Image (cartoon, rainbow, N blue to C red; front, side):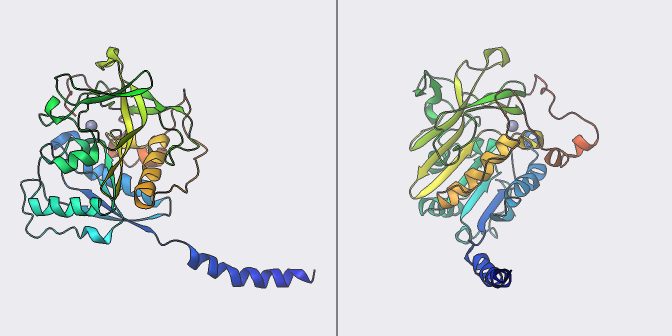
Length: 320
Ligand code: ZN
């Protein structure tokens, strides 16, 4: 019994040391303000993205709403140097040159970047941004934007055949298959798991330079797909900067998937630090079972009204 007080004293002495030895939070800029008109309700998805990041205890998230592409940028200075990573929930056609230059400098000098869903539609005529995303869609992109990248027979193919860029079928659940399971973002996750109903982007085109495809999903011709295994999670390098890009995450319902939540949490840590310290959630989806978060679903007012946001999307909506 004599040792107990000693242990208690030691613990009391060591605890504050352990606390101060912890890393300070990773400073993340969550950037929104425009996303392809009515297709993407960024005012709903931004709080979800913040919740996803902050619940890890790893990140300190600052939300910044940029002007729309045709707005007044004269007073807009995101002060990117304050942050370790940018999470892009912004999709517009163009930005002023000085803002583009600041963004390129940030990533080129080692800042992290996370591209979520329609953020890869943005800025078709900004070469550096397209190098950062690797692939993108819509906004009149064609084969001139670069090849259509997909997996075939376990190999990454860059298909230069002419055609449009960007398409998706109805929102249905689909399987995700790991292509680089040893990457820190995927390490420990099941190699195959089901993502909840979402837009499965296909025919994305771009330079695809310094890009590693971490995971793919089969784009089913029965749902207006290509028949190819399309990239669903990628990492890229731009200068000294690391980038994580997922075309998943159309809406709150899609973002409620435990699998996608995990990828966004791990991807953001990885772009900022080069490491992933997070454990795999016990409720991670399996090869045949969806796993969604009720707390995230309830952040969509339509869900609370009893609407069914995970029902298949109307066929007429094909763009984005
Ligand atoms: Zn979408």
